[in-house]
Image (tube, rainbow, N blue to C red; front, side, top):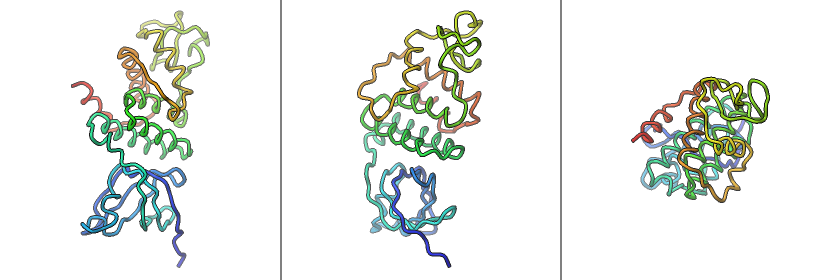
Length: 246
């Protein structure tokens, strides 16, 4: 019998479910191993050392008996952040739920370790108090390259003209004045910001001052673009839309 490998992984619990009378199975997004399933024995017991750790969206260092492609076993865990600010705000929690489901979907298509870094940086910024809408939009825009469907953002998608006036999900990127047709024309600030967001390092953001009009135009574009090109249809997105429409 091949012994299990003892390892430490940094990660975030994205889901938990009961296992037997007293245990839990955790799904954890990690940087080095992707998404792994971990059995936390006795985690539901009142006196279990795992009880406070084995909660959804707990960010921790997990010591586990690891087995590739099979259920690993939790040995111990050291909490790094419980994201209390997010969990006390229904709007922020809804965005955390969405970006976690989205990240899970992206990792299933691409195992690049940078995906975890983007995901973690986004959560930490939302926890710090930055606008969850624009932070989520930055994450969404960055994920498109890992999904292989990044829109054309270096010029008009039709002719390559660098002088563009709008962005179209239908056409797949920026559009110049000669090829607008019936496309909705976004503000000049929206065009400038999208160009910046593609390259910004989320972890280094210190200030975000974006008007509601620009946020809506960017968010509407990304919603339409994801629907058209990614094949990712997430339940959490539907709830998010219903929440923001209230």
